[in-house]
Amino acid sequence: MSSVTTSGATRSTFSFARIWDQFGMLVVFAVLFIGCVIFVPNFASFVNMKGLGLAISMSGMVACGMLFCLASGDFDLSVASVIACAGVTTAVVINLSESLWLGIAAGLLLGALSGLVNGFCHCAP
Image 1 (spheres, rainbow, N blue to C red):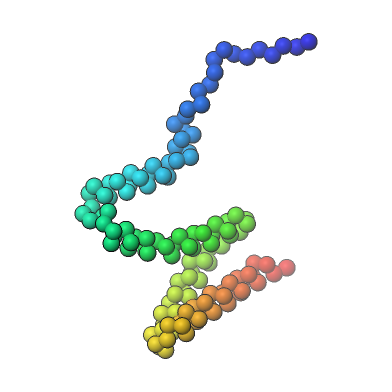
Image 2: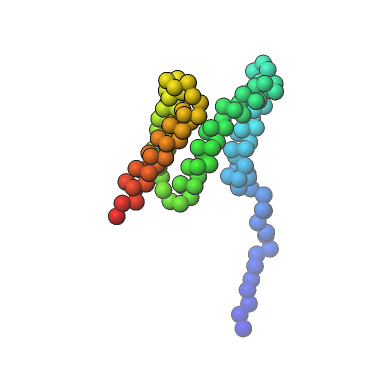
């Protein structure tokens, strides 16, 4: 019969490296946010927080879309250029036709066509 020997010393489960690995970005964000609140006048005002939320909402939606691409194993760098091209197309059509809905439709159509061409280029046998 064999016996198993264990050492009397137990390993500590607390590790700064593990905590930094899990929560490092949150800590950096909190430090930057607190620093801006302290040193930038009116940073924590409702109007500024609303403006920041509106400004980063587009980037957040693009990041969520890119997450699906990366999770599926695809790495697509054309997303930012398609978004910029569709946005410019939307603005130009709105200025020329003075129709909001026509501009939105043109931007969506250009984005869909770009995605279709991109999909055929990547998935062609």
